Length: 114
Length: 112
Image 1 (cartoon, chains in turn blue, yellow):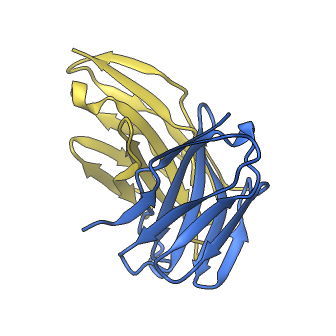
Image 2 (spheres, one colour):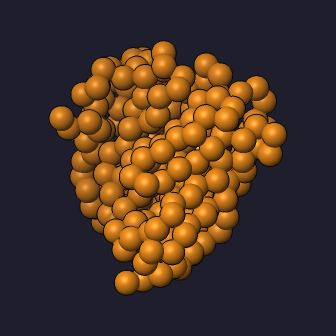
């Protein structure tokens, strides 16, 4: 019963490097999300996908791109990493057709940009 | 717009003390309300939820009541344990929009 799986768990990058954070869910959820968590800021939504092939910007999309490859997978890409993108990144999923149901979260990717 | 405000931490208590973490919200209509918990090094987990006014959510000894008249959803526990040390997030979801708005989180430390 994996739920939401994120890879990698930790990553250190140099400024200007690129990388993709992977996320997959096995709960047949239609909606998926990427958040970043910074001290004192709570969770901030980066991008959101209501279904395969659709994506929408959240509160803090600048510097990121996303791909909803299929119903299971939703990746987040940093094209040119900046120190301000040092954060913990969480992927989540939910069933859009059940408004009273919560989002399910992965364990996070801890990303440091030097 | 819709928003969630929760008490700032950290909150430090002794084991077996009574816990209250305040949460108030602003929303149009009738949102669903949630408390999530985040243990060190982990993602967020749903702790409890309430979907309509006067509902009480409960789990693991924690309780919260959906108070529409005061737009509040305060988290309470009668006797905390060291294992309750974590960050707690209040959140709301409204209408058919499946995005959730989170509060900034309250860090709880329980001393043995």
